[in-house]
Image (cartoon, rainbow, N blue to C red):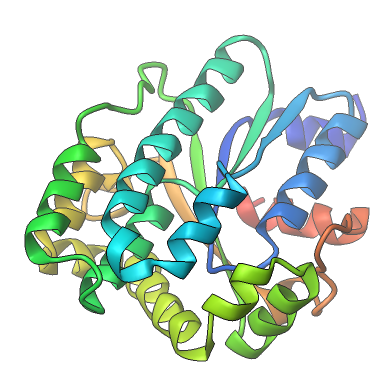
Length: 255
């Protein structure tokens, strides 16, 4: 076993990619999985749940549909993470998930802040988000990777991928507000949990509080900056070079 493969072999588990719209999560996720598979370590990328008709309707009717949309999405996030855990149990070495529970919570929190979701609806969202649990009885290591990017870059990338409803519906303010919420929840999660009962309830219920006050090795957050960690080279639909991916993986696993 060569040196790099040995290092990868020692760092198994699940990576959950978080970040705003157009940050390059899918490009990073696919690149990481391709790199692991090239080393003979079977790995899987699980894309974010997406239904284009559902997305188009949400963006076009955000005020009326925000609550319903978020209740659909949070259940899909939980299902996807549990699928990732099952794949690890079945022998997959690494599973990369495109957006998880914390990312969904960022959207719900922003929509609540903007008045698209009422106080009562936000509370119900928290209840629905805790009906099911992440079944991580085996203590599979989970790394939450926050991929951060500048709003002007996000707007360019959204335009480039060409989804009409996104181009029309996601403006500078929407993306700035979403970035602010991501920063608050992922860069200072303890404070966010203390200030928001719904955040605290969801995080604790799903066993993600280990990166808050009770630190452990099970779940950790790693922040990647687009310009610093990728040299601005990440792009829609492409695959990152092995050199960049190896550096990113080493940072994710603190090697």
